[in-house]
Amino acid sequence: MPDLESLRGRAEAVVRILVLLGGSNRSYRSEMLDRWSDIFTRKEPFAGLSVERRQHLLHEKSIVATLDPDGAVETLPDLLPQPEDLALAVAMIDRIIGEVEAPIAELKAMARYLCHALNQKTPKEFVENPAKRETRGARKGRKI
Image 1: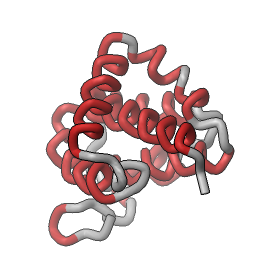
Image 2 (image 1 turned 45 degrees about the vertical axis):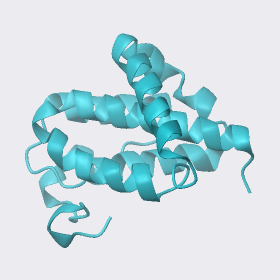
Image 3 (image 1 turned 90 degrees about the vertical axis):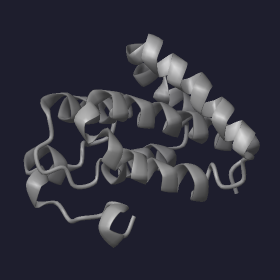
């Protein structure tokens, strides 16, 4: 079982990733917000946090990701020291992006940048042919 510091690092990393992805593709932001809601309220490391703690974390990490996006990305590995956490972060990036029929270049670039910073491969199906991905979003009853 992960310790409290590890859970805190995961939570901070996830919020940074969510903010950075959302900022990189504003036209797709409402779709991503559906996925955020599920992760931010029902999934670990957030499920056990109070609403106030989640709000504080979102506010704090949004500021970090907005004012210093490069620093926010480059320090992600510090928040995720375990190899399995890095792989889970990339899976989460893939899940948050979901099915994007016509992803803009900024979203693709952010996904690659995040995965590179985490020293992980960018999900192949997103980078090479995103229009053919399996649907996994929260809208229209799609499973997350």
